[in-house]
Length: 116
Image 1 (cartoon, rainbow, N blue to C red):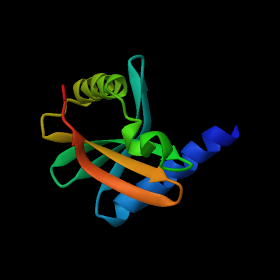
Image 2: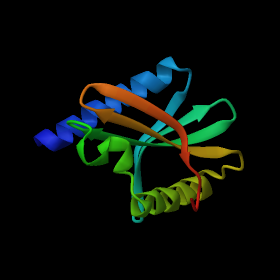
Image 3: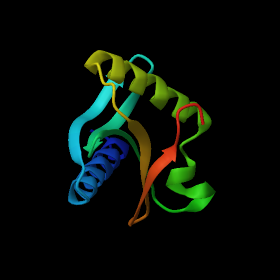
Image 4: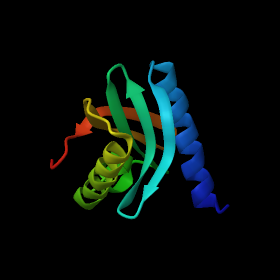
């Protein structure tokens, strides 16, 4: 595993632990579909939460959260729709971002909405 992949894996592990400590239950990691990948899928009460984890060495160039571009959001939305259809999910859902800039973690619940 290369250094970038190791950094991403560590960030996902930390994000999963952070979300679990906040009471969310991780139900799936690294859901892959032809249209995109979802880093973490969690339950928060009655909602399913699709989580994008981003890590940057520092906050330059807008930081980790800003790196979730409109194109990335569209890929996440498409992958989420496939997950929802495959699981027959009818309940509420949201898209969160967990961003790491250097050593700082930022959790952004409902970071964007589908089509937004």
